[in-house]
Image 1 (cartoon, one colour):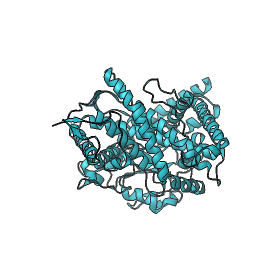
Image 2 (cartoon, one colour; image 1 turned 60 degrees about the vertical axis):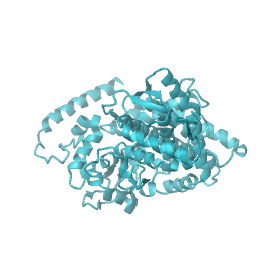
Image 3 (cartoon, rainbow, N blue to C red; image 1 turned 120 degrees about the vertical axis):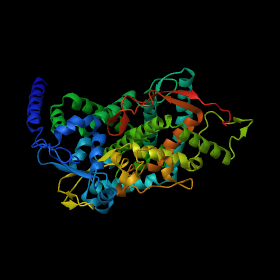
Image 4 (cartoon, helix red, strand yellow; image 1 turned 180 degrees about the vertical axis):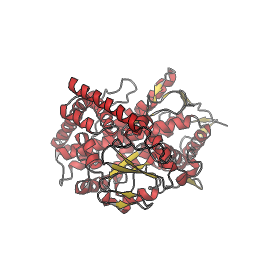
Length: 520
């Protein structure tokens, strides 16, 4: 440990020395190019702007005529970052086979996800995708998701918010939504309830061991740290010597895998008494072609990861945006009232809502929420859950905008920047305007290569519909019942670039029960 720290210190001194030498050598570079240094490439600029990585890249992409830039890391490693929809379509669909995830990306998450569907290429990915596509398109799974979401809202989320309102508490909504998402995705994946979101007890008090939820969160955060490492070989050295964050990561992954394997073995043993069309695990076990413990563990852990942080971080940004836009909130409330009335439920009597306080919305009602759907999509445009995605180029290629891409280069499409490009969304691209998604009051889907929030092409997100079910259900039930007051709502929260775009420090706010009298 002492030797490793001493080496790191000397490397830091060397870096400072090189930085000073080369600091002014490229001062004549054009302003729309990232400054590149001999030997170090963009490393000095990356370190200086790592805390604002997404906005830093957005600035350069916005200035470049084709919204695409090239860069060089230390050594010969080069890459391309793009916010151009025609390039995105080319890499995700037109020339899909030339842009896989690549070994380097897979290695970052392989300890945790193995070769699950989100961390594999080629034949293994196609096999899992085929099986998962069939399962996700079944009505029974959708109904299972709806039932779990409704129960979590009625039995945990609304009671927790009621208690907070009664006690005038400041709560962290992002943390609450993460607990909600973790409960929900574990039930969908395992049909096991962690009970992280429990109105009467602290988090992590359910059927699954509390260590499982804690270890899963730690593993996610530590894996994300690998992606933002200034020098990739550092985490590999730490892993080799089993020190620091890599030692904690190994322990967390071991805990997650141990619990996942334990559940898989128990489910296989009791296979005859478990319905095959309930949770994802049961569905994959029933597939005799490939149901080894390792395969099941990898794919289930992958789906938990995909469902845990994406919807919670997206909704945190949505509620923050909504807090300072009363007109949009009013439009959503009017839509909800109209839907309640149109289905013949809970008619207004004597100027008051005649409804059960814990009532949720049906799938058919959710489908009628066009303005809410547009509002959530608009929040996703500005604050996508997965703000960047990277592939590798297998063979020399030229993008449709003329950008050359060399063999072995990384190719990243920046979804965060795409939401801020005037060339895509017009002069008001940074404004929150749900109306841009509506046509005659009906939600109009956008081209997925202009709006790749759920990815696009053959790897299009299978859980897109389920994500909207969960997000619309939560928003509709919460804002119909509560008024939200965000602490410091005038200031944009800093974000943490983990595996998803999370708010730094969470989303502290207060809730008040909304007046149930008819609004004028």
